[in-house]
Length: 239
Length: 195
Image (cartoon, rainbow over all chains, first blue to last red; front, side):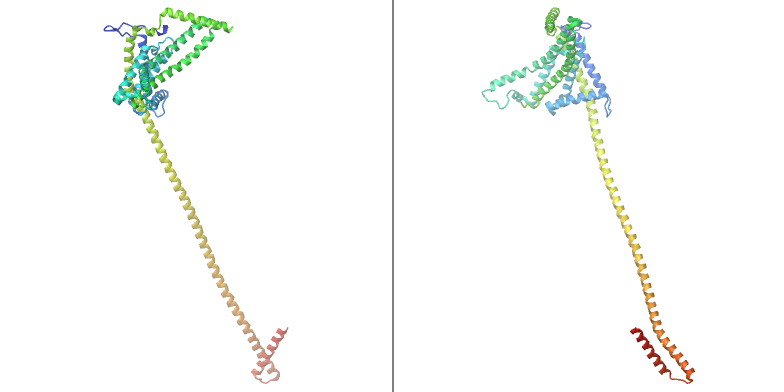
């Protein structure tokens, strides 16, 4: 579990009595952010009709996220495009940077994913109430349900709504942590079994690396698309 | 052999997890020491990312995409227009070819007609001339024919008159001789007819 340890880099920074020191987690957040900005800025710089590789990358990512949003949340979600795009890129790059050996995976910490998920949850709820007023509460009353079952259904709906930030954050955190732990365990097998028996876990480790890269992308995608779905509930309110 | 390996793997798995939990003492994720720091840095980095992306980079990318799309649409439109133009030109060209063919045909027909007319004219003229000549020749022959009998009669009468004069020595009535000649010639004519 060493790879998940957070430690201070540089001097201790205190805001009042709160410790906000620069840590390895902060370092990888900054690295991811800068990497995203550099890649996308290089991709957005040129304006050629036939794009080069970086431009193609930026434009493909743009249209990928834009299509994802319009497919799940419709045209009303256009003002939130920048946020979902940043969210997707941030999670994706944090996941991917975590795949580099000896690096730190920002998204494998529950506090980070929970803050993101809670922000999305609160934001979506506020948007829902602004758009529909108290009518947003209809979200908890699905249509076509018999009156007898209604109290039960409403309770279930409210619980499922409130568990959204938890499920969203734990999904990402658990996936990243489990994957990295597995890789660490198999790496440990390679060392402990030595040159004789270590080949099997080593091949597993190689396969797991591929799987983890897939998971890193997939979890970023799932995180973004669930955000879109929640946003769709708040904007369009058909349940 | 396989069993041994599996047992060994399980054993080392237990060993490693025990060692790891011993050295770290639970999940570092649940240690709240740096939670606030992580939240603060998350807000700073993600906020900066969001602001820069939404204000600077994403509009650029969207502009690029938009301009590319409009340019492609424009090009398609131009291509469409040019295609239509070329089709029109092709039609015109076909028309011109058709017209010139018709004209050529007309010219050919006209020329042919002209030549035929001329030939006809010349032929009819020639035929006319020929007919005239033939009729005049026939007339001449007719007149010659008529004249020849008259002349023969005349000559016969004159020679017989002069012969008789020389033989007898006196003048005989011309008319009686000519009637004799006439009767002879008629007789010979009849003889010829009978033969």
